[in-house]
Image (cartoon, rainbow, N blue to C red; front, side, top):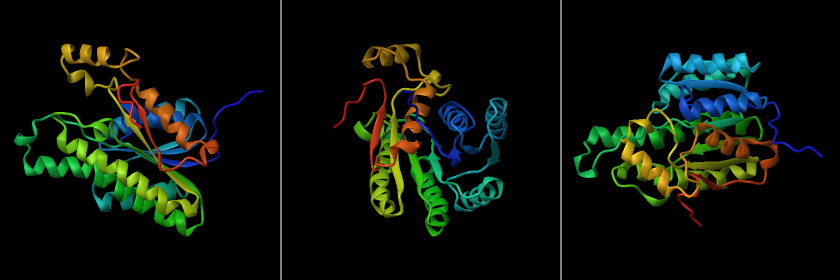
Length: 253
């Protein structure tokens, strides 16, 4: 007997999908049959993601939006509905992960970290879930947090706090949305091999490889596979969960 995860005619919106993990998530969901709206601040990156999806035979559209701003999120929701109908698969992947000692953080830096990494997920969920609940439709929400949000990380103190907020937000929203048959789950990535990570020193990259039990950096596709698990039709009984996708780096109960 063959068995595979499926997505039944979902309309997906993936934030921060112009490169890296977001691009892998968008292309994976499209390959599974979802119609995908790709959004990013990087217009060329978002368009490239759409091109790749269409080359695979999938359906996708792109729009530039700053999802930390309510007006942009409202515009994103309207664009998605006009393009494909109500979105019923929401992936909050947008994030920003600079490293800086906490005592050197400016107020502007702190506010941006919280806006991009936490507030954006709140705004997107509220804007997209209101019409979905009103229509009586089931759905899936997958938030992307971080291993730092579970165990902390020096140099990413405010970022870790914001991602810890995403974890708590995921669990509380899952309780509120359960009666509407909308599941809400979260992926907590570890060290993922993206251009941003490659800005780290070679010594730091070697440290990651030694520290990770599976002895390799994660790939964007590893995160996309985790999202696919929570997005699948077969995962209707999974909600309020945080899945660490980090090669065993954080084994948290």
